[in-house]
Image 1: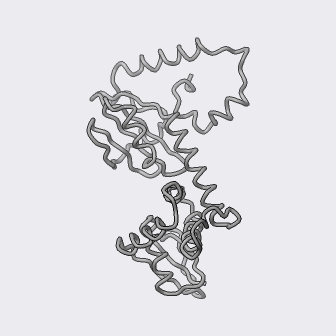
Image 2: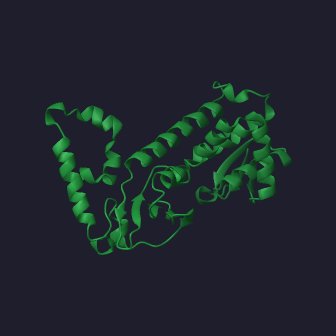
Image 3: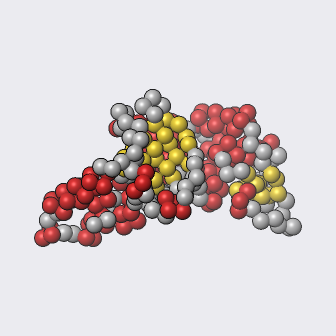
Length: 256
């Protein structure tokens, strides 16, 4: 078995698939650079990401897969899971080497694995869209920071651009250290450094950068939440099923 070491990008995976055909490799173990450990007993091929090669593989997959499956492929990649990288590599080979309709064969291990990971990433996307809470900063920008299990920022961009089209906002992923900034015209990717105070406060920004009215709005929302809550109908098991505890840090009503 040959080890292919790639840079962790989608282009890198697609280039690795191209190289495997070009090198006529029968078995390949795909691993990202940051997880690679040299092995004296295994041959390693370092994949150099190339747009030309990646585009050819992507085009080949589009000829075999419908648009929905192409989205699933991309969403599974956003999981950033090492095993999923291998699953995507194997899935692509299976689809390219098989007749049309192979993606419907859930008896194939890679088809099943990619489909299952797509659902997990999609669920995380949906929860981020539901649970993100913005805070207004002193300059009028609405800000939220998150640390999702998967890299879902590329998937939630359209939702927030359409829902909050009349206000400037930033959604920043603390785990991956980049964010999205909407300036009332377009959404751009941004990066910036946090102080320790900001990076450790998932549910709040420091008071000195917030709009003076933000604390009042937060208190009013908590009061509303308390007033509409009916203790006699409390069903914590059902509540946690719909709003898992790991998302409570995003919700101001949970900071009571």
